[in-house]
Image 1 (cartoon, protein in one colour):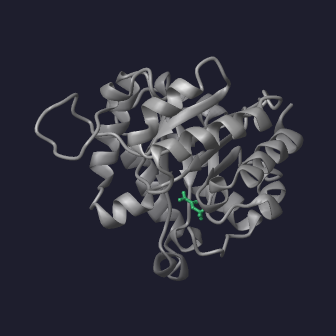
Image 2 (spheres, rainbow, N blue to C red):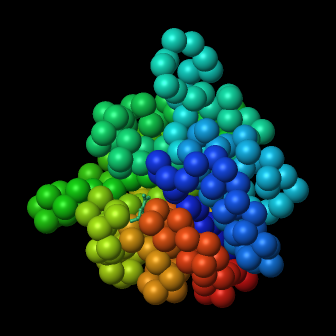
Length: 257
Ligand code: PEP
């Protein structure tokens, strides 16, 4: 089975709409040739329209950083999955910063994933344990629980559009990444194998799973070489055109065919 590599840059609360447009124009020219890799940028929601317009007709895709499960209504500050139609192909859900600072729950991640799928988007569902959980040996059970809660009620057919990102909290924005073997083992035991039980072999073998946590050009090849890792969700390094382009090039070289 071949899983197309996927590299997504999560810009978080960085880059103005104008900066975002300038950036994606430069990046698109640098990554155009790597069509064996799916690649997307996740700018601030303010920049989604401009970035989406700037990237029309290209293979550099757009991700939103979050989306509400309701179609519309009295939800101040929120953006619905329905509103993202035509502006983004992916939406990141359950990012650890949203879980930590905006009290995101597994139940809400599940509602949001279903709403995203219904709106025609591809959810990128982020899961991962804290340092304390990791040190207490709770990683596998905890991440497994996040995965099954996020996917409750999602059909095997819809799983073809779901991406899962394993991001140990202690490796995000800290410069401290998990070793590639560690990450691959956790992804296998806590994400891919549970998919076999929750769904079937085909879903387990075909679902794309990213690693995230201080990924940069210097360590990308190691992660991409691991059997369970199909790409990266990248924060810091995705803010620089050279680094982002290098990550896509490495993904293409290591797993692009
Ligand atoms: C992230 O925010 O998803 C992330 C992995 O950040 P960084 O690459 O900066 O660790």
